[in-house]
Length: 637
Image 1 (tube, rainbow, N blue to C red):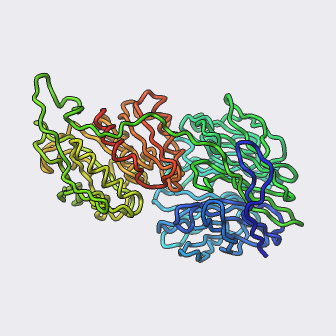
Image 2 (image 1 turned 30 degrees about the vertical axis):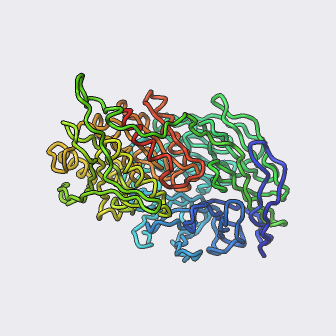
Image 3 (image 1 turned 60 degrees about the vertical axis):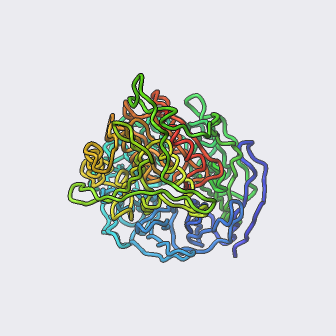
């Protein structure tokens, strides 16, 4: 029997509000539960997924930030860890366990596919062989020994288990796994915390050769607790964090540091809870104790700040997500007891997220107000102001454009072009290249109605504002005439860009700008912007085409090779990175705002001119400030 409990409250740390109980499960027997959160039903908010022993894996649908439906069973499987990932590459989140995966069929339905794993060790999901598909990595127990991985062969099938090098211990159980690029070579390595009795074992990592073959493991230290991968010191690489120790990545070697711990720890998670730009910790107890969080402070961590519940605790787990969609990272928990069952809930973060407060002049200048550098000389007579070839009513925004085909390597790629009304400057119109988001054709740039999804009204408004400010707008289509996404963060192209079809496209565009085959365009005055996949593609311009672009506008995205919540910045950003405008909705559940902010902060630390504009009420969509901010930013540079 599930007992749905809404609004039950307990006293709590000032940073967090009282515990909000999602549900209570009396049938759970208490041993090693897990909790994660993600948008399973595609409605823009995060749902809660749990593993409870004697129950299995269930999910509670988020009905509106603080209200959840009763839990529904996904699969009655045994798995001490649960993850969410799109294993079948169909655009939604599937539910992954150590025994197999549950395909998300939509409308709250799931279909379980066993992978033949067995055991009950740790779990990770990552692309180990560089084929663009997410593979399964598991820590075994009473089955095949060590850390194993299963190659995703597409179509929902997985290959036979293969071994990952691991640190041997009395009984090779991986209680913690991290699959990240630990040595900075562009592929996914594996770190494992091997354990016998939870209190002993070895921590080590194995380097990937890029195709799923691993070098012998490098030993780090005797440590057998949970580990996660996170950039604690904000130097652009992945460190390893355990319950009472963290291991600084110094370029493939790891240096251990002590983390304060007030109790025996069962689980750990990390996020920037207080909005100050660094990584804080949250821990849950193993046995008696309280959930608590630790603010990062002066290179270390502050005191244990209690997040109390009243449910009896034997075992517990924590994770992080923006549950209520307010832009702040909340703490999810599950606590269980063999006699009292389990309680699942979350602590709402009460922080006020930082919002750029710089006054903005909403009037967009034009080339007659602020000419782009190099466009005028003393004594020039000002040309008539350009105007946008667009019409706008309360119900429809629409801009005229032409479509072209350009030869890009072996492919013919479609490109849409609009130029302002009026005579172009002598050297041609400056060019704003706009990159579409995934699966949304670039043809959608040119027409929108107020109720179109993903802020399309503001997208077409941005196009019109750029044209009115004197920019030509060039909108190329992603592969399959816009039916896919950009190559920038898709293996193998993410690390071998020169082999990608989209690199061929960019070279073809540069040639077209130079020979005027797309119209009177000035290839020396280039700007780029885009949303989501197109935002990552805009960042690619800084990485792969140094000196080409005068400014960028990255909307709902981050660094060129990041993808959603998975985002690790490089050791150093390009020295000549163009000035960059960042636009982001704080309720974005697809690309967390923190991934953008870390990129912006790193650029600012490097002395790059940046502007961050965050919309507290927007999700993964074009924000209302885009039509004024993007043209103004480009004209400033």
